[in-house]
Amino acid sequence: AVTFRINCRSSYLFLFWKLFMPVTTPVDLQLQTFNAHDVEGFCAAYHEDIIMAELGGATIFSGLAAVRAHYTALFHGAPELSATLISRQIHHNHVIDYEQIRGRPGKPDKLTLVIYAVEEGKIHRVWFVPN
Image (cartoon, rainbow, N blue to C red; front, top):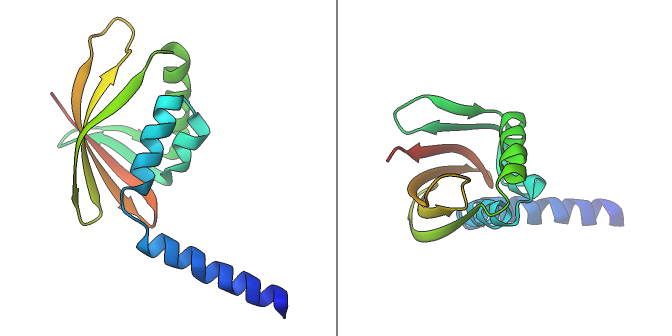
């Protein structure tokens, strides 16, 4: 009976945390782990069915496996790669970040606008706004 109460209480706390955690939590996690080149930590911020796409354009990645493969190669090939948050807007379950990307091999620094849709504590959709 004690085990049931602990599990039940833990489940309620987890549900409470999932429902009321800040929408920015997984977005902050992916930014921190992106800068640390921690692929597994980075992927932990994303939903299994993540879709990354250009805003109003084509899908770039579909599914966590594709994201994991891409970012594994990217982190390996760009050891100086990092992102800095310039500004952030929040609208319901959407986080809109203006970021500076540095350390892309053979490319200049880039300012980019990224929109993250968060559902149930995970990033479910990402839209990159083309420059």
